[in-house]
Length: 212
View (cartoon, rainbow, N blue to C red):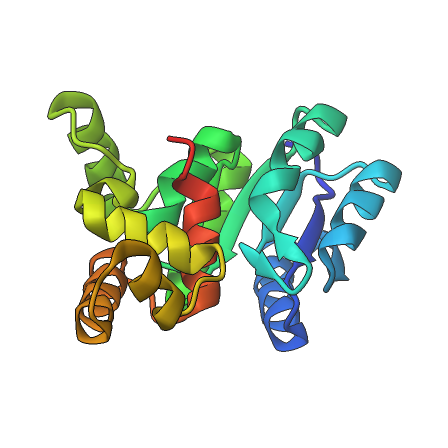
């Protein structure tokens, strides 16, 4: 590894970029860290700078970072990407790894874990928590699916699709000939099974896994 590390930290919350930048500089004294707060600015910087490490969130107001990973890798094939997110790694980590990210780290991690993850990605090109490693092993050895949408019954999936497409409870009742109380029960079950709390989280999850 070269002496001077060029790093981009991308998150729509400035307090996060400041904190992560501090950890990077504390780990690599000669690191040059660029902070960005918009998804579109990530690509602009990637096009103008030679970057060794990109530490990036999943969610931005203008969209999801998953879609730009192939473009980033095409522009800079040797770049290392560490996803740093508050979203459940059980659901998102493997999809991001499969798309080209080198690691996935929870924002609930300790400073020590963040430091270790950064060092691991820089030195070895990968970082996976024990939990994600176990998920991958289950997928390979036990043939377990990593797609959380497959945990839904056919009816639950049908209702979830309608919700994502903007249908309200009344429209769902009319479309599927169900009682409002039944639809409410299904919605609660869907959110519980997928481990999401809001409609935007549900939509984002569907965008990640609907074609798998």
